[in-house]
Length: 297
Image 1 (cartoon, rainbow, N blue to C red):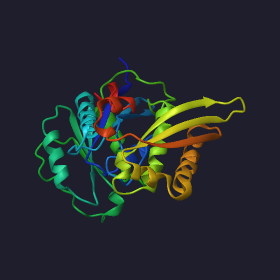
Image 2: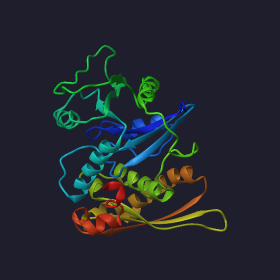
Image 3: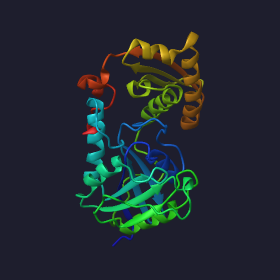
Image 4: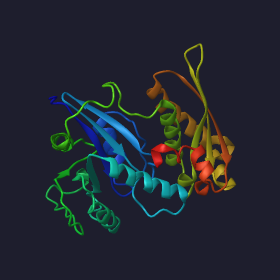
């Protein structure tokens, strides 16, 4: 019998608890975008961590929230689907904020899960060392509670060790060189959206989708990428473009740096901004933008 362990660990929590930042820290490189804007993660994304005798497939999910449109409905469905198919569940909470009413609603959902549940209090670097952190309003069974920091890496090795101990025995699901199951085109679109989130405020970030129109390697080794940034209103289009196109140029410049690090080659990035009214409530457009396929069902 093999002594190799493998399995899926679903990361769950309310928006802005740092799930994506924690995942990037665990994997050791950037595989998912981060932002201080709620609901940054929209798709189910898998990060792959290979150890000497294990492979953990971390499933990053959208933050559980009350949906206000069809995109939100699909995001919540994605998160619930990941929970149903995981071997273990890692519930991430914000140590600086403490246990909130939104966490209480997630507690109700998790109380009925059959998988073993682990808790990670993230952002522990922002609280006093002796601060007591209570899982109020939760009466389910917890296998282990950990205090971690996505920024410093504190507590992460202990968390991984505990999870590996509870994984089932089995083969590796992915080759050892893989760190995520998403293709480069998906990551490129996410890197562009990340910069839009960085440069915009209010409702604009939630109304943005990015679609890669063209992606090809030129004979000189440069990668040409054409992408469209979609918004829902003309006013949002103007905000993203900025005065004399200044903001769009900044978005493109910063995204290009990230993309070049990802692909390991020089990149020519061409961006357009278009309006697709109320796209978050259009089933056809959601599927067109990649929010209605098998990964989200």
